[in-house]
Image 1: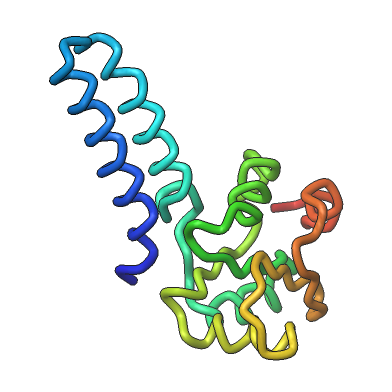
Image 2: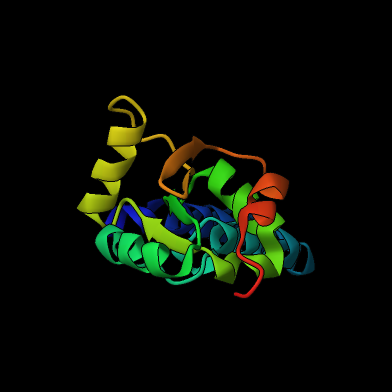
Length: 145
């Protein structure tokens, strides 16, 4: 669980270092902009940018009932972030499983990817798809959700 926050925390620390350096040089106003950029990047790469994750077993059970796809992801993955952003408001219509928080999710991804933990791996109707086009995934979402 802690490793999901390593990249966001490093970005915040880097932002603080840059801002402190600029502030010490006397450009306090110029220190705010890089700090905000680093904080924004940290937020985008944190687990907070994604809908609440559930366990793989629960996601599989729910998907069998409601037909929604399952997205296996991890923090710091630029492809997962791209998928999340491009899904927009439709992101809540997908079951999200963080493979760094759920060992069963990591095992499901390894089983679908010949032992690799390649994310995002999306399971639609029981079939895994690695890093699918977000437009295609939106087309796979159930209409009634």
